[in-house]
Image (tube, rainbow, N blue to C red):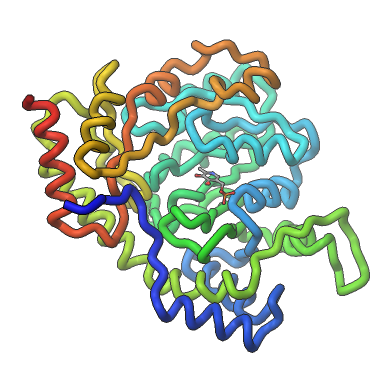
Length: 368
Ligand SMILES: Cc1ncc(COP(=O)(O)O)c(C=O)c1O
């Protein structure tokens, strides 16, 4: 079996042609394709506004900057996510504060969030739809109302995921998406998108990402150069057309893994959908203590690429230990997940035979 990749971005001829057309016929920056991509993305998510940005981190950051939150606001988020989630809060001059995850689904725990909110002044929340699994938005919307919070959904890993029929990114005050090359859809490089129904915030974010412009030489904010390039938007438009079919294939692969691994007692499989629809950005299993790295090595030796998302929860990252004085032990579920999770190959281009081979090698490891 030739190498089985963990993830693999799709880039077909239609996408490459669209980028070339955009370079040849449009402004390289803020061309027609950018506006069309934003319109189409807003329609897809089911919101009034989608504002493209240069990355997912910038999308999170600009959502906070466009909101009514002021500097030094406390924003509750999860320590078990890519560090960009909480970095965006710091860049916005605000303070990330954390509650632990639920070990069954690796997502910010609503009960632990409420325990924190009861005791501490908090102005905003940034839950993450990690691995493509929609978080329980009923519970987080309840917390938003009860504690009067701005809610930014980190949808970087969840393009097209749904909670009770609604797309993530359309439920809270803001959604923020990443189009980094490994995501469920990409723009052929870095990119991001903010989604919102808030007209005033949308206008501010549009200006902020474009040097704080009102028009070409009038600036109303200290803005940023955080735009999505036109050729990337042109690729994004074609990717968006393919997204639903790709996500369907991801769900099919997830079901195959579930069936093939159901009786392997030594591992925990990802949570099943209840009221939502996961888009399986990653298929993450959890091993018993001390087994993860051995299983990883075995799969690597058998030509299977493996990922770990993430080997450190953010309270264990050197930069946050220095900044916030974390010592470890603050978020036991996140720390345990970081030690035992393993991402196995998941992308729409995987063949059924490859899925079966991966499952077979996992079974083989445990039956030796
Ligand atoms: C959960 C999460 N949040 C934020 C980001 C940041 O996105 P970007 O890399 O596009 O800045 C990523 C991905 O990289 C992510 O996975």
